[in-house]
Length: 180
Image (cartoon, rainbow, N blue to C red; front, side):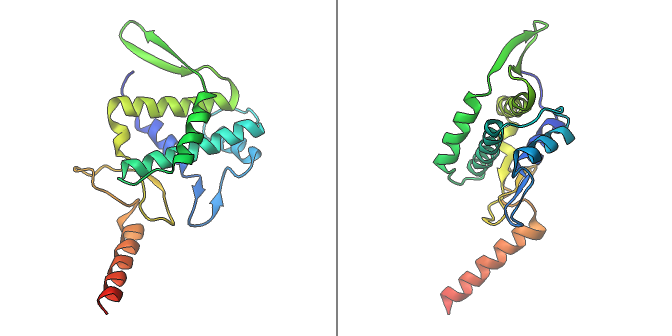
C-alpha cells in the first residue's frame, strides 16, 4: 500500500485533536464547523450533513480510543462500536497501482471522501507499522493524540513538560497521602 507520509498522519492527528477535552473546546461541534475545518485542511468545499457530522465525530473519538489501546489502556467499547459503524458507511476501493502496490481510495464524495481518506491513512499506518506509535495521552483530562517517536515506544503523555509533569505530581501526592 505504499509508505505512510508524515503529512497524512499529521492531518489525522490534527483531526482527532480538534476536540480539546481539557479546554472543553470542540472545533467540530456543528456541521458548519466540520465543513469549515475540512475546507481549511484541503478537503474541498462540501457542506456537512447531520449524518456526515455524526460519522466524523464517531470516527474522531473512535480513533482516540484506538490511540488509548496503543498506550496500553482499555478502549471504550461503545466508541469502537461507533467507529465500526462510521467506517462501514465510508466504502473504500482497492486497486493495483501500476502493477507494483495496492492503493486504497474512498468511494464517497464530499466530506465523506475526506473521512474515507482518514480511514485510508489509518489502514496504511497499520499496514506499515507506524500506527502502533499513535497514542492517546494517558492524562484523563487531555487524551491528546500524539506520535510516540521514542526509541522504545514508551511515551505515555503528549508532552512531558505539561501532562507528564502533572501526572507525576499527582502520583507523588497520592503516595504522600497514602503514607501519611
